[in-house]
Image (cartoon, rainbow, N blue to C red; front, top):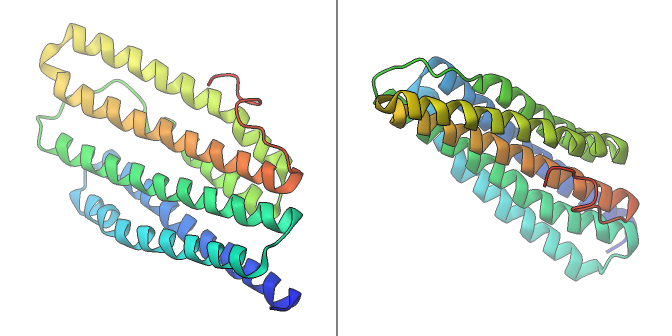
Length: 222
């Protein structure tokens, strides 16, 4: 394999990863829209996207492993392929969180409607912004942008904790609303996990670009 062909294959790997990332981002956006408008047809779209995301994950892993075996890359190219393998797994898990949220929306729709005094769309907006920025840092090989994603994780954690406190009080004060509150609590937890996956992606970008392992060093809330 010539170096030109090798780097073309790296570009193809990157493009395939970004296609999968777009699918996972769309799944998250749809799951939150389903929550906002309580539309089960949107839940169906989210759940139908899961097999395609999983298939992409397997294909990307195989492409990356083939490149490692055929070329035995060194230095930054090796870090790039290793980062892709790890980012691939986190993107697939973002898709899983979307499916989980859609499932919770289905459960909520089967229950009597109640007023849940938390702002799930605001938390979702923050988590989705983290994912977008993390992926942009990957596209641009921008370690500084990746660092800004890691800094956002504390805000998502704080919002999730505030939702937990509010819903715990609601369950205590209004026991009849416990099933609805627990489902919303799980949705918030899913969104907090989306933020965690975005943070992981950002850390992998920094590893690729700088050759530095920053796990557990830049975070202040984990």
